[in-house]
Length: 255
Image 1 (spheres, one colour):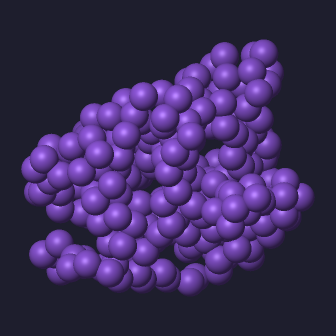
Image 2 (image 1 turned 180 degrees about the vertical axis):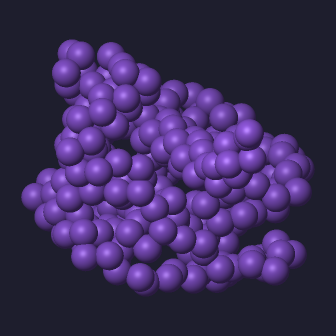
């Protein structure tokens, strides 16, 4: 077995152990702040190079202490300027790998079976976008996709991404109390995000509540949809909270 294969094929027991440790760390409310500079120049931004705390604040940062997937996901949120014109896919992936200081593994065997090649050219211009979005758009031009496993970004075919399940810990204590995490919030996610992919509905995905977190085993596509849903819920919660004083003032002024 090659060294790269060893990096990718970690034992399931180790992955589960990291998940439990991540959930434990989150429950203890660490306040670690992560900063990461890429190997290439950062976009012109006053905050470029500094990773903002992920959704969930310090709780999510605590998960990243012991969860290599969380570390990589945080790096993928870093803003990136895309100026690729007729650039070989191999060069674009190398740029992203160096800029984010991550490992990218390309499943050459699956790409060959799929008829894809790293010589394919990439054309993409974005003034500034999350690296995750840039990577998705770059790979879509070759009908490819990616998932994160043991902290490594694996580039492969969409079918493989759909079939590969990974476990992630989502801090949600800011959205729900512990009983609601395992109840209403968990149910909302399963009803809203790819319903047929969950174990309760005949699929393989699982979701469990643990001390103000959700431990989710799903494919990369569903994980990104969960992130988007939680982001929308946080935005709606913040808007409702900010609007409450105004409603109270208006009520007080009524005769």
